Image 1 (cartoon, rainbow, N blue to C red):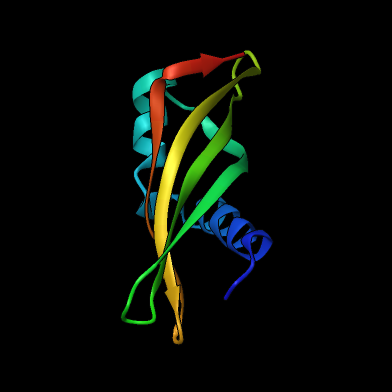
Image 2 (tube, rainbow, N blue to C red):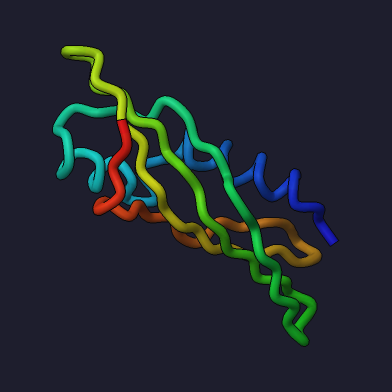
Length: 103
């Protein structure tokens, strides 16, 4: 079983380096055009074992976004889902709850 800190680091790394695969920029752009992701913090992770040897995981996160013009900083909560098995770990989806904006 992969420990939660490893999953957390993987999720953060994927979202910071491959954001275009998870629609986060699209959601941020809709909210505050021109914002970029400055940091991702995983808040919690839940596991669900499958009979097939696959373990699904899901959790919540906080994304810190920065808009360079005016140096506006906002945070948004979101959710992610993925799985791991004997072949590796995969982040399947991540999205933001754009109704929860913090400054």
